[in-house]
Each structure stands twice: as C-alpha cells, then as structure tokens.
Image 1 (cartoon, rainbow, N blue to C red):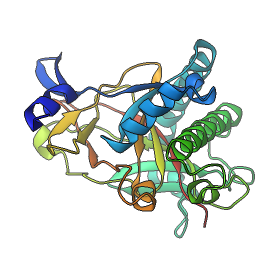
Image 2: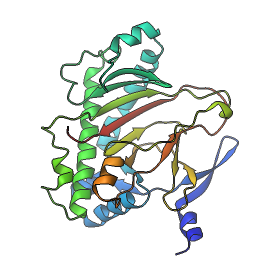
Image 3: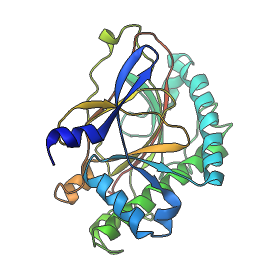
Amino acid sequence: MSQTTTASRLKTTMVVGDQSLDVAQLEEIRLENIIAKDQLEMAKLLKAAESQGFFYVTFNAELSRKISSHLQTCYLNQHEYFAKPLEEKMKAFREDAIHGYKRAGIESFEITRDEQAQMVLPSPFAEHAESTLDLASICDTIVRTLLRSISDSLGLGESSSLQNAHRPDGTSESGIKFVSGPTKASIADVPDTTHTDSGSITLLWCDKWATQMQTKETKEWLWVDPKPDRVLVNIADYLQNQTGGRLHSPAHKVSQPSDGAEDRYFVSYFLRPNH
C-alpha cells in the first residue's frame, strides 16, 4: 500500500468554526468487549497500539453516565481551583513529588494512586473527594484492562514483564491529573508543547479542540476530535521501549485551531510502572 493511500485513510477533513481541519481517524475500542476478551476487539486494540498509538475507548451506557457525571464535577472543581490566588494554590505544591500543584507553563494538580488515601485535598476537590477518587479508580481499572489485553495479544500472558511492572500492590506514580490549559488570543502565541508521554498508558478527557498528534508513517500533524462519551488513549514510552518498538508512543501536543482566548480543562490519568 502506498504512503499516500495510507495517509488518506488516517484522516478526514472537518470544519470547526471557520477553520478546515485535518482530523485523525482513530479506532474506537469497546471496553466491555475487551473485558469479555473478545478476540476481534483485542486484535483491533493491539493494531491501534502498534500503528498510531492513539485510539478511543467507549463504554456501556451505565459507565458512560457515571464518568460523564464525574467529569462535570471535575471541570467545575478545576474552574474554581485554578481561579484561586497563586499563594493559595502553592499550599499544595510539592517540590520533589509528582502529586500536588504545579505551575510550569500550564497549571496542574495531580493525585497519585499511592498518595490518595492520606493526601489532604485542597478545596474544592476535598468537598467532592468521593467523585474525584471514584473517577481515579475507574481510570485505573480502564488502563489495567487495556494493559492486560495488550499483553495477552502479544502472547506474554499473566506473568509477563509488562504486567509484573504494573502490579496494583506495587508502588508507582500512577495517578489522575487535572490541567488548566487556557488558549491564547493569537495562535502565534501558542508555545510548542510537542512531547511523548514517559509512562505506559495515558487517558485524556477534554471537551475542547486541544490535541494534535503526529502520524507514525508520514509525520503529519492531525487534530484529534474531542468526541463525547469516550476517552482518548495513547501508548507511552515505557510500553514502546519494553516491546522493542512494536507498540508506538506517538508525539503529540496541546494546541488550538483558531485565535481567541478561553479556559480549557483537561483530565488525564497516567499509568506508570512500579518503582
């Protein structure tokens, strides 16, 4: 198959506002089918992890409603939290830890899985701790389900090094992260945030056009559609390295399709290997 034909299958064109965008056509993986170990769905997941490294995961109606409710709470929490004075937010800053408040170009607040039981959450996350931590638990289940399926499809089995490196009873820096990513008045002011993720699997929710991915074959930059009722997933560096490059950790960046400042909030979950 020619590179031109491959590229045409990877994208479509969508009009967003007054912009015509090249948008990635990504696989959609049904979580309940992966849980049921449906062989066709597992094969589709592995192919997506090997090819572009980006894909969507969809849920049954009950889980979708629960996640949507938690996300709306999280977005409201983020709006209130990140609007606080800097000195108030800095109370949750931790110098030598991933968790807590960070301010490095963008603002973020992260709750790691290992710390969530004893971590004192700032307001308004504290008032909605049950919803916040339930979403974190759901995310952890999703990424571990995907990891187990990928490991099985690779023929590695339950005792594989991939699964052993992500034992739930081991210590790690896996966790849920809340990010405030305001847009700029001009696209020309948007910084280049091109990167790959250093962990194993990343989940990302954002209801605005905010993510671009680089295709594996052509290195073309495509927009990722913020589709409702599904989560964007990408393979990260650790899985690429541990599989000798068979799984693909894609380069991606936060951007915006047009001028005009507005608030944007991201909810991410990072599966990271055990220490």
